[in-house]
Amino acid sequence: MSAATVASLVFFIFSLIAAAAVEILGSLLRKFAEEAGINQWVFAMVPALFAMLFALIVYQDAQRKIRRLGEFVSRGILVMLLTWLSFAVLTSWIWCPPGDFGSCVQIAVIVIGWIGGGPMLFVALGAGVLTGVLIFRRPKPPIQ
Image: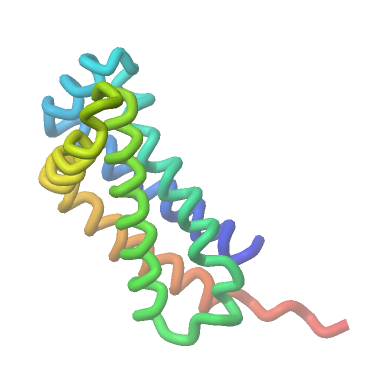
């Protein structure tokens, strides 16, 4: 399994746990999903899928390019920033009228950061470290 695949699976699982925590603990995200007419668990799954996509892109050839654990964590933060912005744009596109898209994106970025900032930081740090450990500890392929 490639480093990007390992990273995408780790980020998907961590993001799904974080989205479920936000969904269970906060009713604001649930109300937002109901207003948009989307099932709340499908709505909670979208950030995890975005994180998986961005982890596939950001961690491409990571086993050759990355040498320190801190680099895995910084890439994890980049994955979560891209996820945060993509989710804000998606929710604005679903919920807001086309004429107010720019101001809606600004509000969505703030609200999503306020609601999910802690879980997103948990995902970025936890998944970044775990991805680094899993990739560094991979056994070397046998020489044939």
